[in-house]
Image (cartoon, rainbow, N blue to C red; front, side, top):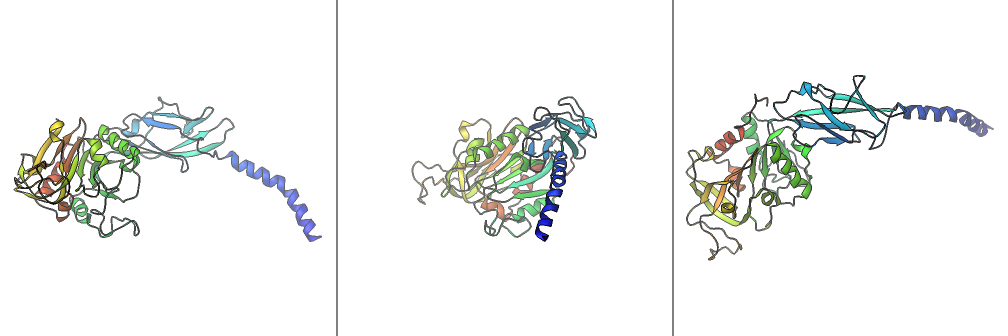
Length: 355
């Protein structure tokens, strides 16, 4: 009898339970296509990141854009309307203050609604170390087994901490993470620390967008004995090959080479296509007896060049890239090279800087 009574009570309550569930559903639009399908605004510099599960939109704006007068363009599914502060928003015409995150409410024809948050990230003179494809030089002794933590000891930490001591905000990307444009939001200065792992087509597209946006890129690569292809270098127009040791002892005048007599070169690679790219400015060559070991046999063969170029500047309309084929020498913080490089990184950002 007790069991039957419970069943009767349950059946009596079931309609109210179902009604309650339906009522809750009316207050929430679920599903990946029930929000923003696209989002952009004036002054935006990189593709927006739309996170359906979190109901968030993040986008980067240029350093000199007034964030209080942005006019977003967006798309939502047919029959949906977008509101902010109770006012319906019109794509391409409604002005919005993005000095703080903006809460949007998206409603369907049955007045069900979901809240979204949209955030503008301003481009600043911040530094991102892209060590996501490093073969171990930057992150040593950290590994995929222990994870990658910029606060724990690693070989690149001395350089990163020096930059922090100079007043820069510096973040470091760990390995085994596929790059997205959103990871670079707000960072004008990028340090690419080695390229041992393969770059995907989507990751190369991220760098294409960064170059179009404008950035200072410090491009470090390494010898090519175990990793003959650096996809990002090839994509940029920097073809490095072989292995070389010695000193960078022939230097062209530049802010990066001021007061330098030589730089130790430790198992780096050499640039092969400098003469074919008019946008490359060579700043440093190895010594007259140093050669590029292209077949890794440890001896100078007839077709292997002496005193090859290894360091320079690659110019794009909105971006400048400093490149060098050796990353190991960086770890000992050779001076005045490092201070000169930091000065070069910090120049040419047109704005009142807010680090």
